[in-house]
Image (cartoon, rainbow, N blue to C red):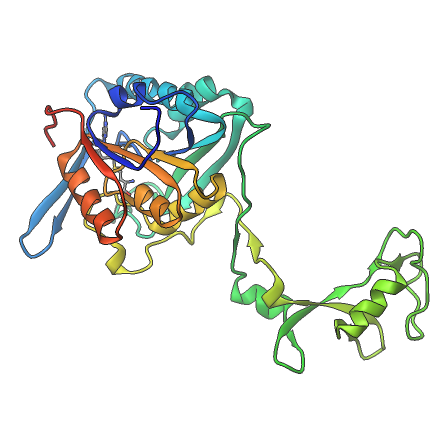
Length: 342
Ligand SMILES: C[S@@+](CC[C@H](N)C(=O)[O-])C[C@H]1O[C@@H](n2cnc3c(N)ncnc32)[C@H](O)[C@@H]1O
C-alpha cells in the first residue's frame, strides 16, 4: 500500500497496518477500546437500529496491553520522522498504556503532552453512594516520532469573557476593544531614553521601542495616553490570536445535536480538528485505525488532508461511509476480511 489516496478499510487493523509502507503517515490518532468491560449502545433513528460497540477483553490487563502494543509498534513504523501519535484512553488503562507501551515504543524523550480532555457529558458514575469523584476526563497521550523534527502548529482559542473584560476594558473612538500595554522595558539599547511628549521612561527603565517606532505608532493612532500623559501601546483585541492552547481541553465539545451520527463513543469534530491542525498541514496523511463513526476521517477530509480509516466493524464502516458521502468525500472502501462479526 505505497501509493496514497483516501481509504476506508474494513478488517482487523493489525494485518492492515502491517501492509502500510514505513514512514508514510504524518499523524496517527486512535481511540481504541478503553478496557472498560462495557458494551456501548445507541438506539438510532426511527427504525430503532441498535448501534453497538463491545469493549470487553478476557485475559485481563496484560492481554489488553499486549493486544494494543503489537498494533502501536506498527503505527510507530508507518509514521514519518516528522509525524506524531495521539492515543486517546481513560482511567481504566491510561497509566499502563503510557508506561508499558508508549514510553517503550516511542521513548520517553519523545513524549510531548498528556492532554486532559473533559468529555462533553459526564458519565453517571457519581450516583448516590459512589465513593469517588466524578470521572469526567479522558487522557490523550501525544508523542512525536522524533521530538527534534515533529510538525507542531500552535493553536489558540478565544479569550474568556472575564479575561476580555479585565484586560481589554478600553475602547477606541470606533468601538474597538484594546489593552493599554506598557511601553517601557527593563533593558535599553540604542535610542531608548528619549523624552516623548514631555514624558521620560520611569526611573531605571527605558522605552521598549526607538523614537522612530514611537512616531510610527503615533501616525497609526496606536498610542493611548493616560490621564497623566503616560503613553501606552494599544493592543487591539481583534488583532490578537487568542489564548495559547494548553494541555487542559474543555472546549472541544459537540457543536450541536446534529453533529451526533449515532455511533457509540463518537468523539466531537472540534477535538479532531484541533489535533489534526496541530500535527499536520494540508495534503498530509492522517490515519485512524479504530475509526468507529468516522470522526477523524470526516474532519481530515474537510481540512484537505489525505486519510486512511480502518475498523473491523461492518456497522462502523457503514456509518462512516454514509457520513463521508454526505460531505461529498472522495474515497474507496476496501473489505479486507469476511470474518467480521460486529
Ligand atoms: C471507541 S470506538 C472509536 C470511535 C471513534 N473515535 C468515533 O469518533 O466515532 C473504537 C472502534 O474500534 C474498533 N475496533 C476495535 N478493535 C479493532 C480492531 N482490532 N481492528 C479494527 N477496529 C477495531 C471498534 O469496532 C470501534 O468502532
